[in-house]
Length: 67
Image 1 (cartoon, rainbow, N blue to C red):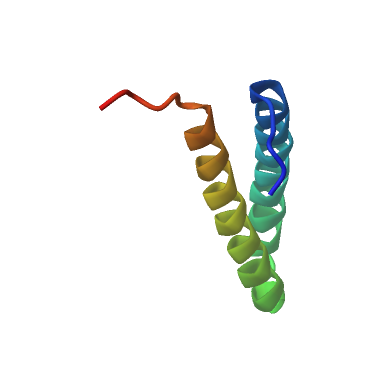
Image 2: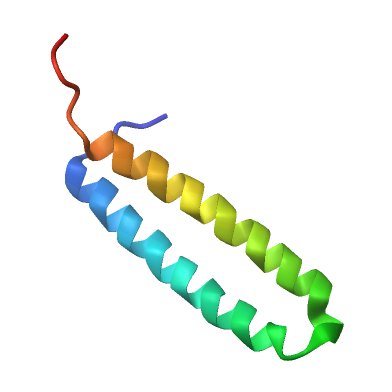
């Protein structure tokens, strides 16, 4: 895995958060139409994947504490 600078990590987090918000909007729209249940489940799974990735990147920004 390529090493990213803190600025690159922050930029990536911002992009992922924007996608996460977009998925929120799409999921809310699909909730009004029960025929799209499969699509809503797929979007929710992607949203969880994004949340995990964001959390992992945020952890990379936290400096290691000396033991």
